[in-house]
Structure formats: C-alpha cells, structure tokens
Length: 294
Image (cartoon, rainbow, N blue to C red; front, side, top):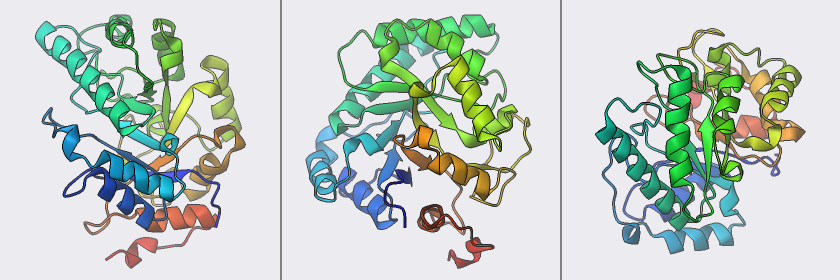
C-alpha cells in the first residue's frame, strides 16, 4: 500500500455532524483526501456554518495526520460567470461565489474548484472576459482560498475546453497567484487529448499553462470515446481511458503533491471508492471488481 499517494473522493456533507462525519467517512474508505460541496450543488440553500461541526472535523483530521491542504471544495454547478445576458443572474452568481469562498475558508480548505461556465450566445472571448471580470472583482477580497478552474469536456457552449482556452482566461486574471487549474482526466479525454501519452499531455499543459498551476486532479474514467465532448464519468477500468492510464496520473512525480479526487459513479447505489482507492494504492487492477459492491 502506497501511503504517499494523496487520493480521495467526493464525499457528501450531511448531518448530523456534517464536516466531522464527512471526514470520518472519507477515512473509512482509506482516503487521505476528499472533496465536498458546502451545500447542495444544484441550489443556493446553505446551512449555517455554526451547524457544520467544523472544529470537531479539523480536530479529527489533525489527530489522523491529514492536512487540510489535502481537502478540496467544489463550487455549485449553478454558478455561471461566463455569460452576462441576464445581469441579475450574473450578479447573483458573483455574490454566491463570494459566499462559497467565505465558507471554504471557514473550513480551512485552500482550494475551491469552479467550472468556467457556459458562454451561451456570447463568443469565447466575451465569455472569458465575463468570467475574468467577476473573478477580478471577487479576488480583490483578502482570503487564503485559491480558485481552481476545471478543464471541461467541451459540451454545449462551456468554456475551458482546451489548455489554450484556460491559458487565455488566466491571462485576463489580475491576481494570478489566486487562480489555478483542476485537471479532470475524463474531461480532457472527452475534449480530445491523447491522455494515454502522459508525457505528451503534461508537456503540452506545461508549455501552455505551467504544471505549477495544477491544484487538483479529478481522476475519472470515461464512458465515451476520445473527443466525444460528452462529460460522462465511468468507474476506474470500465471506461475508454482504462486503469493503467489513470494509474500514471495517480503516481506521476510531477503531480505528486496534488490531491487526486475520484468522482466516479455509484455502483448498485453504493459508493465504489474504497475499492477504487485500494486498487490505486496497490497499483493493481482487479477484473470485474464491481461484482463485489453490494
């Protein structure tokens, strides 16, 4: 078992003890990292931070030797800062993201993953500028949270579908030290990158953006073919990417200090992460492993 691998998964933040139970569940899966939403990803309803058992969760993680730098918060899907056609929605998205940053900081988590958004009828350049304008305003406020813009599969009008698009967005950001990238293996595969050749892929990323900008890796297989632009996650080894390729991203020295987070589908209504983490730590794939999940 490789204890140096920083690996975890998405974990639900729910009662009765919220952050504490979130941390306890993640560690029960043999994870030493995890990602969570501070509330439901599809709406803006949020429980008070006073109810989140944050201090208890921090104490538990400290006792177990898990640094808060291994944790990640994901911003809600409903935040879209790439389009201004409805200014009321755009202003709401900005205020909501400010609140999510405040909540992320309260948990002591250093990284907030954000989808770059959908431009809709706007051009890519307009969408990128809309996003940058919002982030430039939001990031003026003092906090220790970094935004990790996620690499996208390229469905619909979403922006951030290539390293070049993300580089262009980053070029518009004033506080560049506060913004990085979340590299999603399913998304870049679906966007058309030949990720089996990790040296080619990471070399291209380094040339265009810089590897130091990768703050998080979402380690997901893909249900669909390279270049499909579908964004359909699959369990490790059951998709078109394959376990051996994903293992490269788990253990590459260039990504050693970056948390790897699984966002793979549930199996028979149950989280598959304990088995997936076990295989990654052992470096060995078990055929038909889903049959064990029941």
